[in-house]
Amino acid sequence: MSRATQFLVGVLIFLVVSLFIIGIAGAFGLATGLLIPTDDSELREYDTSQYYIEKIEADGQVDVQAPTGDDPDPGLILIDDAHMNEFEEGEIQELKAGLMAYGHEVRVVEEGSEFHAELEDAQALVVIDPTSPYGSQEIEAVKEFEAGGGQVMLVGQPDRVEVVGMELRQINSEINSLANALGVNFGSDYLYDMEANDGLFRNVLVESTDHPLMTDVDQGAIYIGTHVSAGEDSQPLLVTHSTAQRSGGETPDTYTVATASDSVLAIGDLTFMDRNTYNVADNERIIEAIVAFLSGVEP
Image 1 (spheres, rainbow, N blue to C red):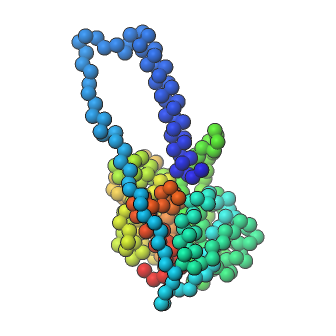
Image 2 (image 1 turned 120 degrees about the horizontal axis):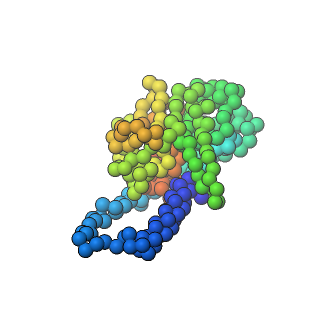
Image 3 (image 1 turned 90 degrees about the horizontal axis):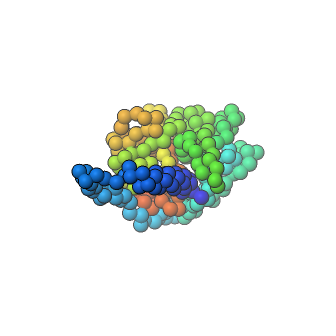
């Protein structure tokens, strides 16, 4: 079950309980006459069109071509799964397919003991929402990898509670244990937008900047997102509308959700790549830009 689906299950459980309580209250009201209007009362009319949920069209496909001309040769792309990383196959299959279409070998590292050895032969490293912190030796290994020409992609998500079966599970990201050493910081709260969204306040619509990687991107959608900050050598890739807010209760503002330097790309959401949402708005074009970045293709 994807992160977005788990969140929706929680919402549905809440709605079912709420409707049950409302039903009891309604029955009580009818029995006691409390909900029966008097002859002098006026029944208000409501415009139900204001509650219509408009979803963004989803119809694109990830289209990555094999390298030609001066494009860099394909190599080994590592995806870290040795730090209790919070991702499922369905959430990365479009990214993996794009990388393999370029010609890369994609390898998921599940054991910490393999991490150092695999990193020496890799062209790029993808780190997705770890919930176990990186040790000092691992951090130094990644810093040396990046300084030596390796490309690094960091994917973080906010701290959250997810539905697992009939239970709630608290998930705290440890992405900053590595990201901070690379000059990046992820927020721990989630973003929401009551106006610019894909049918639900947490399905936040984002806009591209004029960064060369975003040439083919106009608008994207993220579904469990947080904000990202980075040093002066990084530039924003994707930002929210000015109506976005943080779950901490701050006033609406524009927040950066993706940023990139020459060697480190950071994005505060995984769910935009999910098999159910990868082609909403221009999400598929964002995935293509990520493949180009990890491949070392000049934008």
